[in-house]
Image 1: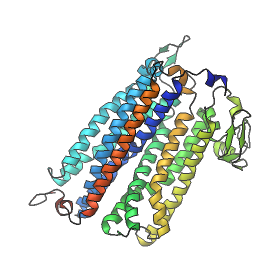
Image 2: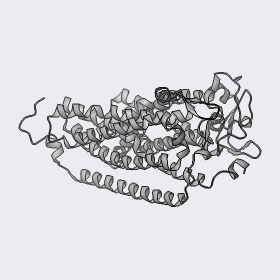
Image 3: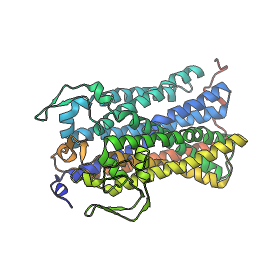
Image 4: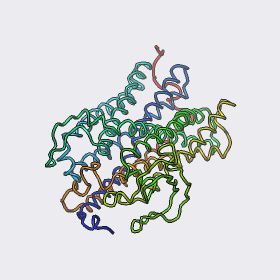
Length: 459
């Protein structure tokens, strides 16, 4: 254990653990908040355009699920907002005027999304069909705007800009616009939005795939698989390209993080790509794993002669747990590769038969895709946050300098843990109850008159 860790404040560990639990719980609901409105509107449009009651039934039920996940995400996100100020006063106190604007924008968009979601859910039987549909159209864009705001703040922490640092550490010449449009924003935002649509799409489809595996192969389940699975599968190869571009950007802008992601121990060219393996910080070596000669340099700079900085150049500023960052990155990349195979399988089958493959191996593959994608999402955030350590603002403020000096953080960590446990269990129980009620209803009002009662539908 190095001197930096020994000198760290006692509050640092519980503060980081609480923040990690909050982020990892909250991120479960964010993809649904971003992507589920798009999928329910696609089903809604299909139902109206083709007079398809099954598509309308899906749209209405997905809107109820969207309302629930939005509410739970709002609760966990509110805790996260408070934690930024309570756990990290050094960060918000010193840099609040620089990167605080995105949080204000996100707050406005959050309330706007809540209003629009409520109008959409309660408007099913109270509005004309196309009016109701059009009022739902802004929801995906507002959700993306909220994601933009939060990612802008996070990417700023990775690539701080929009201010001048004086000789005594004072902050001057603040430009919030430049802070929002920082260098890391384009690839972080694109990478996360694609991940959100993939996670929500694969997860939603997997629910109906499980129904297929149990023999429920009616049109309702077919459409429930086809809409979200097509969206997620179409975005998967794009995400792979964007992820590669993001890794190259990190190679140039955050070399210590890149060295941890690829567990590059000693600087030089012809760097191998090491799959997994355990990093030993005492000897700066890797034990185990699979090494592919020259591939890391090739991926970083399109040539095996590309010089890559290793962890040996960052003795006091390398991530606190290189193995975790490296394993998270390898897992995320590995899952992305596996999901490309699923996407290609679906594309080939649909091109040949215009249908979802009925092969049980494909169905088991598709049923597991939602869980796999969420693992990748969690790994992505581990790479982003743990990989930036020991900096909370890259190369400017160390995390230990931003943490609160208040006591009792283990107590607050326990409270948050219990709160999220209750929220998580409650959400699962409610979703299961909704699913059972829908499944047990052989004939529902939704199927006959989603927008009823109405003597005639006026379009």
